[in-house]
Length: 171
Image (tube, rainbow, N blue to C red):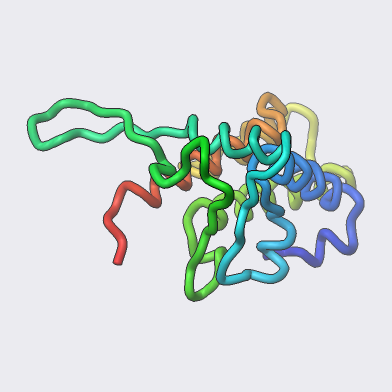
């Protein structure tokens, strides 16, 4: 996942560290750890004041769905998390990078880090055109247009990935 840039470039490391610090603070997990180790599970603990704030954030996350009668309903992305929940565990037998929500964060951070490396080497001309498709649009807005801060980028992409993960019934 281009973690070689993390080791070799201060510009790339700054992008990764910024995303990582926000994800740890807001969601209780490290994207750097997930990319490096691809663990099959990661438990988020909700103890203490910080843990309670993280739990509240998960409880507030919703997605819209349409029922069989055509009515739109908002449902919690984490129906199993409530005010008494002490922890939540993300799992995937092949590793968490096989889940949409973690893979998409890793992809946009990789893109932004690579772009910052190019910018730091003077390879990006001022006023250069930018574009992206689907997930790439978020990378373009964050890295090239510089109108989406890293913290907002990972928030949006994490929520997008979770919503996509819930959109299709999984086995």
